[in-house]
Amino acid sequence: MSVFTPLTKAQLEDFLSPYRLGALHDFQEIQAGTENSNFFIHLGNGQYVLTLIERGPLQDLPFFIELLERLHAAGFAVPYAITTPSGEALRTLKGKPALLQPCLPGRHVDNPSAAHCAEVGRWLAGLHLLTRQAPLIRKSDRGLDWMQAQGKALSPDLSADEAALLHAALAEIQSKQEQIRALPSANLHADLFRDNVMFEGEHLSGVIDFYNACSGPMLYDLAIALNDWCSQAGGALDLARARALLDAYAAKRPFSQAEATLLPCLLRIAAVRFWLSRLLAARAFAGQDVLIKDPHEYARLLSARQQVLLTLPLAL
Ligand SMILES: Nc1ncnc2c1ncn2[C@@H]1O[C@H](COP(=O)(O)OP(=O)(O)O)[C@@H](O)[C@H]1O
Ligand SMILES: N[C@@H](CCOP(=O)(O)O)C(=O)O
Image (cartoon, rainbow, N blue to C red):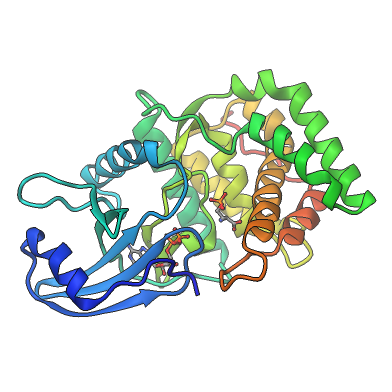
């Protein structure tokens, strides 16, 4: 399970009454999360999701709330923080920061088609186009410097082959960091995995879990999404799905030559980032009843990205 802070009906009723959204009919713990405690909440006038923030960069909660409010105002289906009539978005429950959000329709897709991937590409382009002129500034707390530090700390736990793979990737990151930091930037979701996107059929109906959102190179967001949405079981890229995602994105925001050059490198960086965070989670939650995603999946993916046959569609 992954609800870290259980709640009683009475605690919820007390917390929810200032929103004036009707009586509490029912609630359920959500088991699927890995970071926070989430609950489906059924109130008199509809269904909501309550999140208690358990860890992560608490000082950045105002950034997440503002970004989600901006996306909501622009018509994106996102879990923005609902405010009480007195204007409070961020409240506290059992000593944890607490946010009430709309419950977005749809389901996660485990085996996406090219059409799903195209929707993801269009959604990312929309996010980047909306925010690139004036991104809200937040440096990722799992950025290039973090990767170097964690890579050094975690490599003693790895096999010799895996350590060599990681060291080569970290050396590439070190040598190309200036070029990477110079890529065109915007606000990024920075964790656009299948389990953070909802679909109704082939229509993308919502995106959740913005707690890795930051400002940074738009190409990095694409690399993260390509690795999760467009990989075959062994880690190799599925070129048909990847092309669908990139073409749909490029139809809204054409790529630059620098982005085309750096795509293979960014795919490797995105693989390193989630390999390391999964290794850290496996260490931190070993033996506990917490969902831990397989770190080796991302080692395999990094290995498969040593050669990238995918090219970015460039405007003529
Ligand atoms: N606003 C929402 N609308 C609908 N379902 C949601 C919403 N927020 C979370 N969920 C459900 O809860 C699950 C866990 O949420 P997630 O944000 O991934 O948790 P965590 O932050 O712990 O990783 C999701 O996979 C989704 O099924
Ligand atoms: N989607 C990621 C988990 C989110 O990353 P984290 O650094 O916030 O733990 C994955 O599948 O590994």
